[in-house]
Image (cartoon, rainbow, N blue to C red):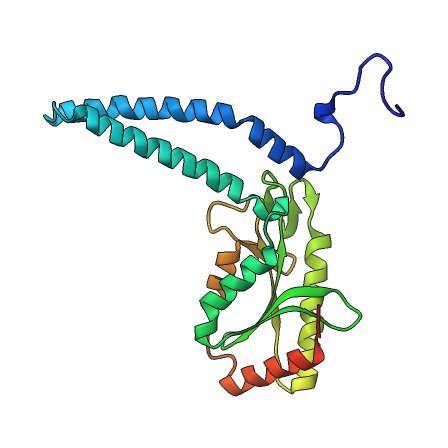
Length: 256
């Protein structure tokens, strides 16, 4: 085998396949350990429940209190495990980030007078996932997902994705926002400035605030994207301007 060793036989556990494939493989293999830990936690919950029952004079019902608390502990532990795995669904290719974000944007903003156009591009240029036009202004929203342990942060104004610079991610979106802004301003006759957002489906965002702003780009969770747009000043565009911009975007921007 080229690049291998004649002394060490190749180990199937560490050859081939994508990080997503390995993640799912290790998750399945660890299922028995997770069950053991869950049973141990439930047992502790049972003991604590019995102790609480005795402490408050529920001698006859102490075992029942223990069983209820054990069931609650096991259920919470199962939910946390499921949630951590579910959070990687877009990264693993099991769900579509565009579909998730588009649904959230429409559900949160549709009744407030916002228009959401999916999959748009200036002819011959890269596409964006969502264009949002409403009383608070105009945004482009793209979707991205990194491995679960990738830390997303801003240091000295620079975007970092793990140990790598994030300029190659931020710069194209900022440039697309500027290009969309120029086109809509020219064709609709309404001066607009477009804010680029990146909905992060998997990766580690700061615990405090959950938003990273760097190099002209805002990175946040899909639900936070809708909240951020909704919180903007709602006196930027009138209903007539929103309709004009939406019709112009539908006409001038290529659907992808």
